[in-house]
Length: 343
Image (cartoon, rainbow, N blue to C red):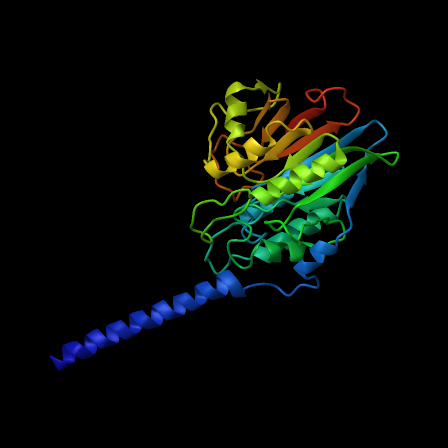
């Protein structure tokens, strides 16, 4: 009897030690495994208003990269992604690059996962081209080894990275990029945070908050120019646009809309539905083929994955989306052209 009791106690002790050890490891990965950075996230609130110039022909080119899901930057899939991004960047003139969320993998406990090495290799590639770039946080970027604020603070070390946020607004990235021609404001780009998960890494998706939408509408009202909005997770109106809108010609699209349901984002749709200045809403996240439809006097554009480490069907080739904004256009529908670009 005594021998069996000792065995039970020993087994329990080993299990407790394992649980405590794993719990400590989880705590380290969720909250402690962050790089030292020269920049503090708090500096984001002191950034100057972003402003970029439009070409003489009135065109402004935005290259969107989303859902690369980098693992460490050096694994086979990541190297293939970086090589193909370099090919795309070499052949695609652009004025702004938007890393539109899920740049790195999310809840990943493998010891070889190296989030900041991956971000560094990605950022260093972009920096080679001396093009302004920014980041719209995805649901995965801040799930482990630091939150979105830590990712942004890390990105702030790069010369061409632009960012901003409003201290009284939810989310880790909210700012406008004003496009100017001969000193005159002709268009605006809004970059927003659509949240992560309500319970870190395992809960339901979060949603765009009311004060974020109010921030957007107030900024648009101040500018009173057509505005392109970029964020990571789509709203229910994307499915409405897919079902009922006018498809953009020559843009490869999903055969059916693979909706990843976030019902709470209907608040965004309801509060922005009648805004005459929102001319484009662009997202990623869903890991399917692209879609682009003109609906309710604006474009809804959804981009497929840009990386080989992202889960996707075999028939999907990772790609980027080039959005060309014609600031001289007389109407919203002719203001944009879209192109899916792969290596």
